[in-house]
Image (spheres, one colour):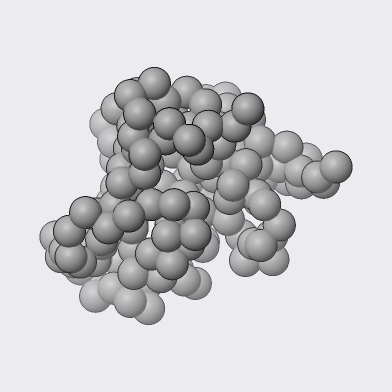
Length: 153
């Protein structure tokens, strides 16, 4: 049995999830981004309209938020996906992804993966749909997952 739970976040838990995203981004993603990209990511985290379009899920260990995922467009696009470093490689990412996949009824989910996360998304079965892109300083690889065989039983 796992020592964490994944669930949809309440409105008052979302600020903590956004803080976690920023914390993990600074460690793993910011080194691959220009100052422009880092500022753009920070701006998105603080953009009320962007956040209002997202459905947020969190992973908790001992009552502490240790991972988060945010999806948009009816759980067809992953907008944010972060797990604290000391909690990585424990199945937390898979649990969070499953929360989105369980609610996806279209048959596929997309993501614009940061350079660091491309191998992780490949592990989950995502395939690149285009080469790496650069927009507003944000480096990303567009990816897609066929969810038909990915949904948790």
